[in-house]
Image 1 (cartoon, rainbow, N blue to C red):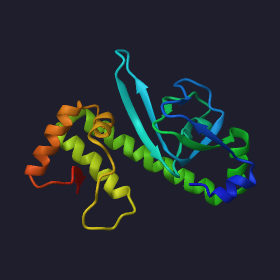
Image 2 (tube, rainbow, N blue to C red):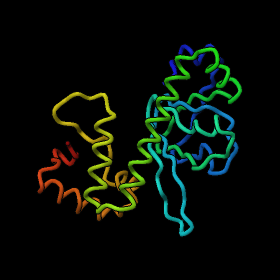
Image 3 (spheres, rainbow, N blue to C red):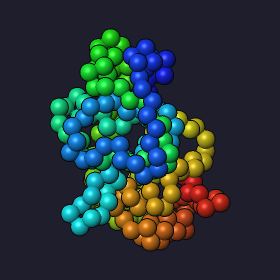
Length: 196
């Protein structure tokens, strides 16, 4: 996202989070820009009955949790490290100054936020009205279309559990639906990995 060299010019700090360590909680006040150096982060909400609804997974090079920095509102979801994770953190005030002084970076973050908004709109529609196979295929095609991989076959970088978390379906439902999609020729399974 933002180059390490540029972040270092603004005295970025590198913070280490152990596996399953909370980075921020839902409704916390945003104080930092976060960008992953290495590791994995999950953003999620808990429903009233304690069920987890995953907003997104983020990995090396991804930033997360930016909208509240611009919108002056609390975090709408929590973030937790899924593995031991190192994260660049920049105080909000410094981050906003970096953007003012580097309009090309500001534009790239704006474009990223717009892509995430489109993803949310697609997924919300799919979750509300379509059967599991359609929901899963829409999610997988979104990942394929936003990847920078230009090969005839795209290996989906998600586990069945992650697909379940992102679609709100039970893992068992995901497994059955993936098998149906394979039989219908809409995807293939190669060494237990889903390919489009």
